[in-house]
Length: 298
Image (cartoon, rainbow, N blue to C red; front, side, top):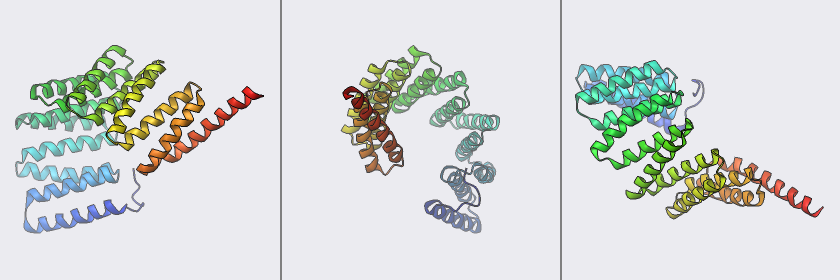
């Protein structure tokens, strides 16, 4: 969380100034709905741009009171969901669950199934974060059933991925692979190459954690090929890093250094701070490779 005395970054500062000015204008005009929307936007800025959940909650609570006053049930449901997110960041699960469940009830009332799915998924993410993985899966599966009923394949694939990763965290290998592979196939069918690559990376990581290095590397390579095909530099760099780490763990230091060097170059294109860490890993691999060759010749 950013301390109150720290200076705001310029984009966030501009957003707050804009929404504060707009809020004052709507209050003068007596436009209650727009006032509520500006309060929500201020809450979102404080939560997601500044990491200040308590300030966000203060704005959300003011907005919620307005939406209830004017009987705007759609925005009431959304704001309850935002409150749940803020309480999750504050690590107050009871309050988070209370608000998310109220949001689900409201979404059912207005027959907004997409909103229900979003909140079920959010509950799954929250329970997973706090280590209650069986509960997380319960909510993911409720969201999955609704997504399938609606024919929303993108959402279905995302939920399958979340379920697969959660099973992987529980060390339940078969359901983890089953759900991740279903997600990968579905992303492929709908042409979402970016998420297909990300899911392959998750499958590769699970192989690695289970000691199946060859399968893990092979899966990373598949994901890498897709990332290069779609010119997604962030994913490409992350996969090159993962391959470098995999070869380093196998003590194949020359190959590790090769992938680390490639990752460093791609991180340079993205401007990511990860490049600095990558340089340190590259230097370590190069030293180990040189040491190996020195032993061979000595």
